[in-house]
Image 1 (cartoon, rainbow, N blue to C red):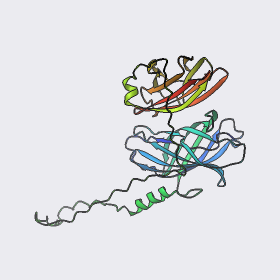
Image 2: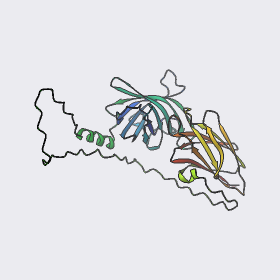
Image 3: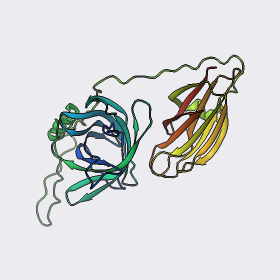
Image 4: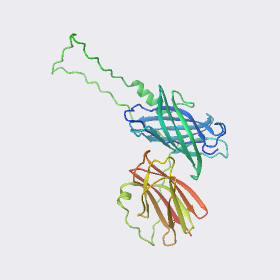
Length: 347
């Protein structure tokens, strides 16, 4: 079933003053829309993560049983002003599944909550196929923080728990009660021992399989010279999301908000020229038409985040229509990187 396996990139957003570390095991389920009696499309879901400051890394398991599952790496960050959570799929590293079943990557929009000593993450998700980025469906998710894993605790989590146990707790001394004799103040020339607490080491997670690095060098355009890139394309990284090849003379791009509409605003550049300026992403398409030809065969389309919306980062779904072909690609942009696609014309 599509949407079965997931790699998650979490953006956990606590309120101001919410300083509890979210490191540990989170377990629950996700359920696709259209399930009958709440069971037909429900799968178990587990997240193991370690948090450092406002960032964290970890792995996820999506499964029916511990012998029929998908495992993935994930990473994320925390918004300190809300308890909203963004989970975006990253890299599938292990799959045990039956033939004919597709693996899909999910993007989740969750909310952190706490009831007594129990902590929850719950909300919705949308998903896309790992092979062709086609839409896999959407649904709901709920996770609860637990002590043990259905599989085994990852080495990075075991190491974090070991460091947590070995870190000494510093207890504040109570103030002296009135009327009691106080300890003498040491003389200036008395050398007092200095106790330094060694901070826990930052935990680095090694993926189960190497993550491929995509390097795409655009073919030189000899027929036409491009204008120089504007500052926002020079000062930010332009990360390639996908390259499309077509023999159609016209390509139509439609850009939507990817998931929850949260006031993301974008600009779009076509071959270094501004073609869309400060447009808000919604469930209504922002449309751009690109004309291709033998004198203009390579086209770079760059999406720039003008803000990060209510739930960082700035995410969008782009539908690329090339004649009868229709493909989807998910784009993510921040204040440090832009999202880019390349369209090549081959007669």
